Length: 295
Figure 1 (cartoon, one colour):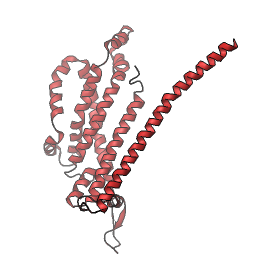
Figure 2 (spheres, helix red, strand yellow; figure 1 turned 30 degrees about the vertical axis):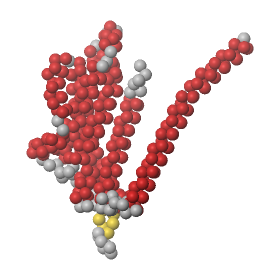
Figure 3 (tube, one colour; figure 1 turned 135 degrees about the horizontal axis):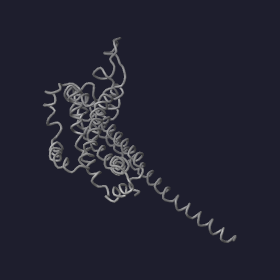
Figure 4 (spheres, one colour; figure 1 turned 135 degrees about the vertical axis):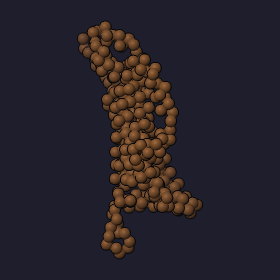
């Protein structure tokens, strides 16, 4: 009896130890990746600083990292208009840089939010009702193939040069990827799951909400990630016309005024924001779809 107890305890300990090894290995690999990225980033900054310090490139074309940092700080603070003047000017173009960024994010939120609402709904309808898919699919593919900036002029004629035309442009840029991803997610569901739910007496609505929606959420989130990327690049380009406040508009105007440090600072902010948005959607998908890849 004692021997059996000892063997059972040893087996339990081996199982516990084997379960910890993959976690420790994953943690070590994650730390190694982070360290490599930090080393590469530090090497890039060092190379950038060395090129500018040696005078290999004129500051007008490539300012130093310190100049870019100072431009970013200046764009987020208040300063005298001129030396000795009492009047202060805050930020750039009468807005702080973070206000420019928030304005662009608000446009993204409005346009992509509309695209998610209509794209997911249309995707479910097209994925579950074949005649509707047959009729609408060519037009959806036509819209998907068009570059969004190709009809910015038409949207300005229809809705003016303000935010409405920009939001519609973002909607048209984000709508096709979300709808197509939803159609793919709905069409990729195994039929035996649907038949099993129906055999248990589930109604059409219950099949839709308890089987089809959970099974297609992963594809929907992938479509949203792609759509946000399209929308982010589109809003930056759309802000070339009356884009103040807006981080894309600030980058364009600072470039036309030969404020290269500020332009590069805006580009860095745009890139970091895009990475943060993608990471946010990716982690949100992991939280809301924890069963993905486990079935």
